[in-house]
Image 1 (cartoon, helix red, strand yellow):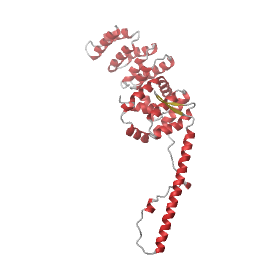
Image 2 (tube, rainbow, N blue to C red):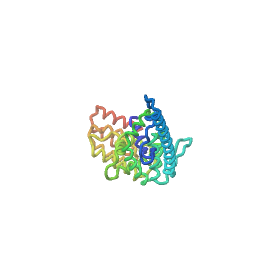
Image 3 (tube, rainbow, N blue to C red):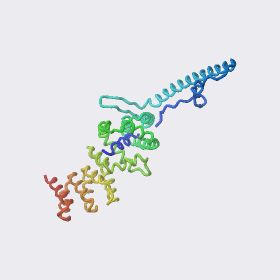
Length: 326
């Protein structure tokens, strides 16, 4: 699946920058490179005083090195304590069926997002996205904010993903299983994001476009609920896209409508038969056949009378009618 890696990265924000350990020294200065002091050549001199001074300098440099190492150890311990404190509320757990992230408030996601980005933890990121989706609108808003942060670090994160998780077959099965588990929440989130005013972060805009390609039909096909407000939101979105782009609308907008077996979705496809240009009729015919709505047969029979008896479109209509009549 050509977009599966895009979906994974998008879903984890998921749908998913801090906690990168920084070592500081007193006064904010960079530790001196002591190898530059210890790797000098023995000086060509017979003067005992000069040799004694050089040895004293070397001993002093070694002392400074030890002090710097001590400061570094203290900084590391302090950073670990701070990191533990920052992520104490957001929790991760591992079970026989995989890892899970638990959140009680959206703000708990920040430290975990940092941590997962920092170590290229793809599974952790999509589990974080799943946890945020369970929080409803507050979680959606946090997801959108994290998409913006993901955009800021896309080069770093993308390079790490490409190096470690280049072969998507490694993670695709587990990802798609979790994607299916959370398909309703993703549907709600994407409709929420689509209806917002103003620009969305680039990664989220990419996901919005994917809803008009592979992702929309897949998510709507997963859905087994009967929330009419949710489904009608997608009917309006997909239908408006086709009407606004009659010759260039993406094929999967029709296929997304085909997954929605409601009177509103069926009426939209029936209406589109009379509205779309001829080069899009084949897709509408296929969508009507898959949807199996009550007016599909009569609509296709009427269309069959209006198109030439020979040709690919006539063949598709005949195949669709054969399917629907049995």
